[in-house]
Length: 307
Image (cartoon, rainbow, N blue to C red; front, side, top):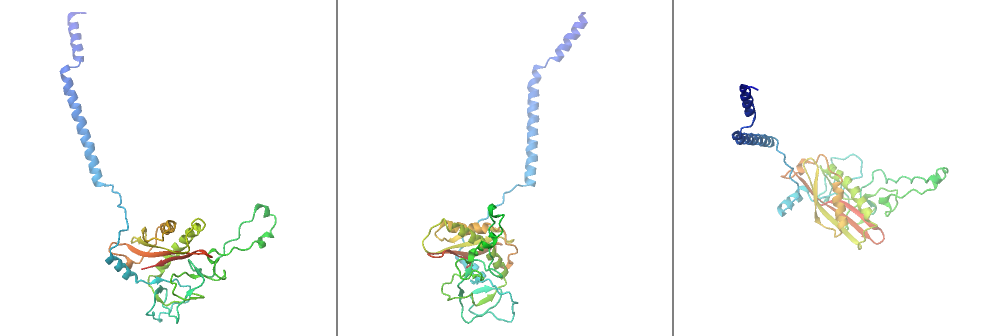
């Protein structure tokens, strides 16, 4: 190889080798680029977070009510109990409400002497008591149809301890001072909120009765009345928010059955706007009573609106 060619080759080799002095500068350059890239990503993330904030909804809790607010709720709800009416005749608008009416219903009604029904039910049956269907036949009986007429029809659960099981049970009432008669005869005042109250009663009552019935063979308590009083809160759309026990029955399973029954019905549509408080909540107080008798066992007296 000639000398000029050797010089050119050595020059190319020298050019291809990295310059030791440039290495720190390249490292600094890449570090700066990486920092700017990281800052850019952080900036985009912060802008996205500010434009589309992700906030968890604040948990809603029924707070303790001060005496003044409690009195306002009592005044709002008139302190009259709810009486479901079985009377399907047209409402007469000319009948005036009696002055001593302690119950709200779908109509004004005046009676000479008030009484409570001897035969009661959690939810009054419309059109007579409903009977449970006959039990399914056993496989061995499928070839013989005569057994169908021999099986006794089961007695309705809610009527087992109350006179003629074919009659319609009246609404159960807590007032022990009322004399007992064949049916509920009470002075009532027509309520514009009757349908709302009735929907609550007819939704919660059977659920509560079912839960108490399931406890009958498992819970042993002394003879007496066991009342659970709860404050219930709904929002403006009728969605269930929660319950708070104001008065315990003294039996945890009885108290839990009340709360569980309310939670089974997540919404009561179209609550009356006039019943909403300043926070947009509808707050009610209801009592649920289990009467434990030596002969009859558990009797249900639910639910009664306190105010």
